[in-house]
Every structure is written in structure tokens, then in C-alpha cells.
Image (cartoon, rainbow, N blue to C red):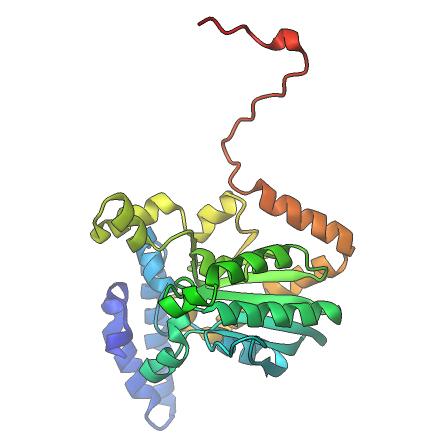
Length: 333
């Protein structure tokens, strides 16, 4: 347990060990009362720490090794999940999962990045770095969902697309670009949820949707803070300054219009209580799908188009068009 704690969580390491020790004992009234008191104290301390996190600490929480993964949310939120494998061109990519499921009684498609648990699983999942076949598999599944008129739910949690030689050889840039174009034109509702890291084109490659949701301690950025610091300051240790400048927190992205709704997390983050985190996501997802299903396909497509066209325009003042040649001031050389 200790090795999986972040530095910001070390103040309540002793409490966690005490709770873990008591949970392993036979239940009785005295033990239950002690557990209740310890859990209340833990919740208070967590609330104090997590209410004043710095931007960099939020990045650490988004990357927490115990943060729930896509398949863990699938297990808690959906039923009858049937996974799809392969892109029908090269192979299967375990860093992206896709499959049909049932949510709130209705059939849907679930797509998402998948990081591993432990060394062996992380190697198989490539630590969440998707290759071209992952994006092509995702698009194949999305086109199938469109054919049957089923909504699409996407979970985002990746550091970036995999930049290795074999990934470049198989056309990762083309795969992501194709997904951006094709997802923008999908006729079915698409809800995107940023649950952990939303890194660069690796995230955006499956993140074009009608409604973008984001967990409170998630992050969504054009580049990881370390990479930004290395480019701008030639010093990756400037990552904290880069994090603040990038505006990658959920509240900042909501203000900029990149994210539509921020989903709250349990005290201490989603990893502290995955069950409650899933409940909060499920509520936001249900409301989002109900909103989108009530809109015609043509209206959804227009709103989706306008949504992404409007991004990045904050603070930009457009020059009014010239309507008359007399409005043009002569240039004196």
C-alpha cells in the first residue's frame, strides 16, 4: 500500500494501515466502532488535503496507479459487455478497448483507453499508449454502432499515442486524423469522459463528441507538463510551472469551453472510493445521454461542429469585415 501512496497522501498513511489491519480482524461491536472513528478521521484529513491541491498535485492524482481504469468503470456501470478485438488491417491493440454493452436498459458502444495493473498487465496494455491499430479498432466499432443507431460512450485515460518506430510505420498520425474527421460526422450521440490523463493527440483521437465530461482530478492537455517544460525551458523540472501555464485542470478547461461538465469525485479522489466515483459518472452520463437522444441527428451534428469550432477563440477579437472600399485607409509608404 505504502509504495502506491502519493507524497500528498503520506500524512494519512498510518490511518490507512490501521484501517487495513482492523478490516482483517473478525467483526465485532468494538472493532466496528473503532473502524467507524478511523474512517471519519481519514475522511476529514483527506478533505483538508484534497481541497487545496496545487495544479501539479492534481496531475499526480490523475496519474495515480490505483485510479479506476476503463474496464473497471465498465464492470460497475454497464451490463452484458461484449468486447471487440482487432482493426481488420493489422492486429489488436490492448491499450484501447471497445465493446457493446447495456446502460440504463439501452444498448450502447463503449470505447476507452486501458492502462494495466501491475508490470505484466501494463506491458500488455503498453501503459495506455495506443498504436494505430487501436484507433482503427475504435473507429471500426464506432461505425458499427452508427449502423445500428447506438450511442457511443468514450473513456479517456492515456499519456499520449505511442511514438515508437512501429507506430509511425503503421501510420499513427493518419489513424488519429481519420478518427477526428470520422467522429465529427457520426450521426449517433457521442459522450466523452476524461477519467485520468487526457494526453495530446493520443486522447483526442477518440475524443470528438457532443458532450465532453471530465472528472474533477483528471487532466487534459496538448502535451504532458514534463514535455512542455523540456521544450520551453529545456528543463523537465519546470513541470510545475508548465502545469499552471497549460491550464489542464478540469475547472480551467470548463471555463475555456473545452469541457462541458466537471464530475465531482469522492473525498480523496476516485481511487479512494471507485464505487462512489462510478456512481457519480453514471449519473452524469445518464443525464447527458438523455439530453442528446432528444435532439435530432442533424441538430446534434451542427452543435458538435460549432462546439469544436468555438474552441480556442477565448479573448480573440475578430477584425470586422471591410464592406466598402472607402473604409480602407490608404497606405503611405
